[in-house]
Image 1 (tube, one colour):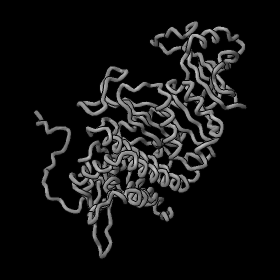
Image 2: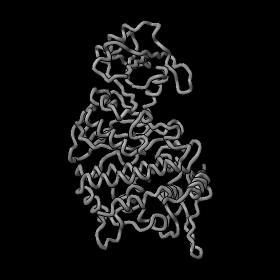
Image 3: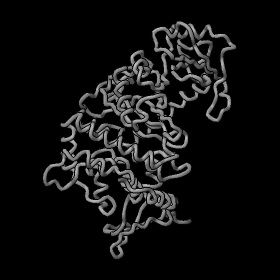
Image 4: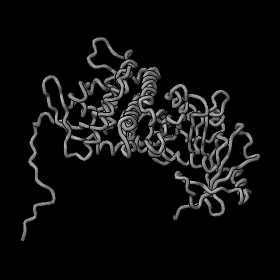
Amino acid sequence: MKKRIGSYPRVRIEGGGRAVVSQAGGVLLVQTVRKAGLDTAISAALTPWRKARAVHDPGKILLDVALAVALGGDCLADVGMLRAEPAVFGPVASDPTVSRLIDTLAASGEKALRAIRAARAEVRHHVWRLADRTAPDAEGTVTVDLDGVLVIAHSDKEDAAPTWKRTYGHHPLMGFVDHGPGGTGEPVAALLRPGNAGSNTATDHIIAAQLALAQLPKTYRRGRQTLIRTDSAGGTHDFVAWLAQRGRWLSYSVGMVITDTIHQHVLKVPESAWTPAVEAEGEIRDGAWVAELTGDVLDGWPKGMRLIVRKERPHPGAQLRLTDAEGMRLTCFATNTSGRPIAELELRHRLRARAEDRIRAARATGLRNLPLHRTAQNRIWLEIVQIALDLLAWMPMIALTGKARCWEPRRLRLRLFTTAGQLVTTGRRRILRLARHWPWTSDITAALERLALLPNPG
């Protein structure tokens, strides 16, 4: 009989190893911060909050927390993973110092939030110029998706309340710039709201849209080249009227609730008026058709608004709703884009589903829960989460190629950031040697070479 020794080798573990760097792949984010100029921009923005004789710069402290969140942390104390590697991340403030800064910024309210947001907007413009052909505005247009996120609270926190999904927590409204099929996306708005906040509150959508537009280069803060997309929560008279307001001239594509009036108009659409829906590759979408509604169904809505409805065979096992008709699932959206086929407009609106990917990435990057008790503190935390998501979007955009540009945070951490390294000091130089056997070491080194070729800010 053979003695079973197990499936994995036995390794003797000893502490006291030297010159070994954990999270060595995090240098990708550090280099992105440098080339983007985010460190100097955040430091300059938070200068008013730096106390006399302070050892640590407030901008560096906030950015360290954002880096920790980008690497997988979900609370302020996780900045300790950076503190353990000063050769890569520099001096990192203690936990009490970090907490005091968050309290100070929270006490300043909108003043601190405006300073952080202004710095992010400035850096975003610079990063898009660095990205050139891979920037989200490379084709002269920008698409912003607005969507709500439910964040569950596991303890009694300020403004936590029962949600519409019978959970308990908060209901932030967020905005993301869509990078298209060849990339991911970056956050441009985060409005913290109580858990019982309404999904279709027009005032909140207007505020979120204003925050998002303020993050874009000035060219895209008004005009048809900026498209605002929402689900049916944004299909309210007040919000659509705000989007279409004279002088703002934004393009929009917002979902609409199938009301009884819309339902009756759909039943009157002749069979010849239905056009086959299409897929992203240009192929016909099986079992789906689109049509445009006209007439008195548009009464009371802004001039130039088009109402487009899609009917589709439901997936096996799906239950029909009262607003569906003739065994078909009905969905509807409104847009002010003219001169394009309705099937193309419907595909453009359907691609809003990419916002769900951005929400999933946000949940994996500090938005699984809000770690602080007071609402003012959690507003600062939301800004930290957005900075972390910015870095996770900017780094692939300016440093990675191919399929790696579409990797979500979990995959970036697993394949790139967790790479081990050895720190070697020779003369006056410090060299970080990455593990040769790691399958993605070549991706990291190639990305660092691309970052090195980019011009320094300023």
